[in-house]
Amino acid sequence: MQSQVISVQTQVIAIIAEQAVLDMADVTPGQSLQSLGIDSLGLVETIFAIEEAFDISVPFNANEPSKSGFDLSSVASIVAAVENLIAQKAT
Image (cartoon, rainbow, N blue to C red):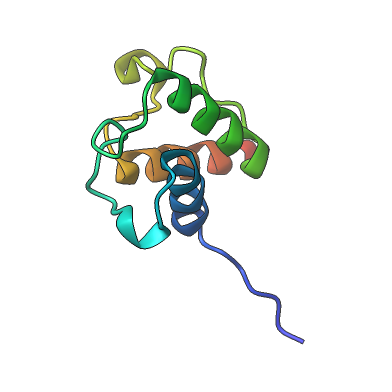
């Protein structure tokens, strides 16, 4: 029996798509959350969902990537930041 491993990118896109009430196919790595229609409340809900899904803590100042290291400027940057937090947790 093979277990299926879902990539971080797929999980993050699924979370973002759910918050934006879009199909996953409509969410691409180059898009910003703003372009997907996610407002500040949606951003908070997205961050909470990401924290829960990956058992990580997103820095409280994530909206200031230069200070937090967590870049919210695009879907791809969020995926990279989540992967980084997962890697830090593993060490």
